[in-house]
Image (cartoon, rainbow, N blue to C red; front, side):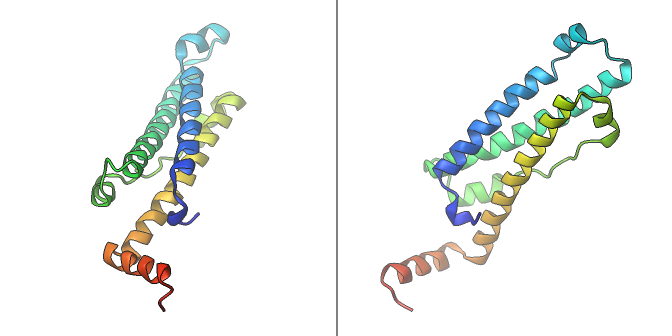
Length: 151
């Protein structure tokens, strides 16, 4: 999706999805409940802890990026502020050995968080490419030309 299509509706839909995933991750990685339902071995508990930290960190990065976009769209951040401080951190992929120890539902949740991060990373990358390719003055000139149908 081109950055020009990045609007409040897209951001709000992604934000809602990220909040739901974050709540699901909290429940999935809460060791207090896991210990009661099944008695995992130490390596499984370590895998659950590691992947839980990776997943929740991934989701918090996505949520922070989306909150920055909401602030930008609301006029609370300037384009320069969001360009300087609003980049989405790089993804830290899950470990296959850890995933092999986890329940399928937990793995599905992790994969869903990775897909969400990848979608938001594409939006972030496209937005930054558009800003580099079209500095603010050039973008304004382009909008004026479109408005007045000047070639």
